[in-house]
Each structure stands twice: as C-alpha cells, then as structure tokens.
Length: 240
Image (cartoon, rainbow, N blue to C red; front, side):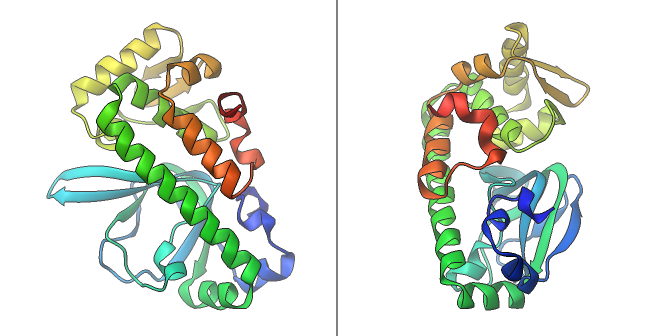
C-alpha cells in the first residue's frame, strides 16, 4: 500500500518501517494543518488530493498548490521549521499515510538519499506554485480550469471525482458564475461531464489540448527533479 505514493515507493522496507506509517482517511474538507500552527505530522497521500490554501482576508481562499500521490505535505518539518503560512485541507477524498514529526525527522536525518529526494520534490512543488501564480495572472479561466482538472485526474484512480462549482471557483480564485461558464464550455465540447457535484473526464487528450502550457511545464519539472511514476502516467501524452 505505501508504494502507491511515489516518494514512499522509492524507499526500502526498512525506511518505511522506521517511519511508523499509519494509514488514515482523507475526508472532504478535513484540515490537516492550520497557518502558523505547529505541524505534528507529515502526510503521504495514496489517493485523493490535498490543497494548500491561503486566506488573505477572512472568507477569501486562494489555492497555492495541490498535492497527491506524487508527493507529501509537511515541508516545514523537512526545512527546519514547525509551522507554515498555508492551510492544508482535503480537496478530493481519499487516504494516505501519516508519520509523526519525530519519526519523520529521525528518518530524514539518518538517510541522505531520502532527504535529497524530498528536497528535489520540494523544488518541483515550488515550480508548481510559481507556475500556478503566473497562470492565474496570464491565462483564461477555461485554460486554467482544464489544467486544474488534469492535475486532479492524474492523482485519482477513476475518471470521475466529486467536485462542486463552489470549491472549484475557490481553487481557481474566481467567482462561481465564471466557473459555471468555463466548465460549461468544456462540457459542451465533450471534454467533461459536470453534474450534481461530480466531474467525469470524457476526453483526456482533448482536455490536455484545451489546457494552457502550464500543465506540461509542471509535469516536466516533476519528471526532471523526481522522476516519472506510474501515478502520473495519465499525463504522459501531454508531457512529451
């Protein structure tokens, strides 16, 4: 089971044992860490999607990055801190493995190779954050919506996943009517089905063509820094 996470899958059985991994459910909108509050664990998703968000003003949520089975949350524990400015919450339900702060730090201090892998993943995540920031400033909502759906599709086992228009609007930093129009255009073109809080990807290749170049860049950076894992094979065509 831990091997379903790309980072845990690269480890020896001994290192995974030393992490004392605990399988935990990720229920929708569950908050795993709060801004400026001590982080007591690192999480390695094996299904579902986690979202890192900021709240510049009360009630105004802006997504910073998403994390799935290609990565982990708890970067401050790797970088020598115990807190971070972003909230981490469950965006798409699933499950993952939890390791305590003490076990996580003991393992990375004792294993240079694992620590180096996590540092490279951190660079990949920073690239995602930087690219997403540029994307939100420069690209049309429909392109951004396609990119976001592709990144989510990469991290789930099915072509369908739960997603409300309200949540998608928050993640894209736009008003709900804007998302309704963008998703409606993708649906009319036959790329997705969107009804009753559920998204179904109908034409993956066409969705990649509808996305801005940011999806390809983010995927290529992950490949360069961490290496392609089976968890991202859905996006192989767009990363060529």
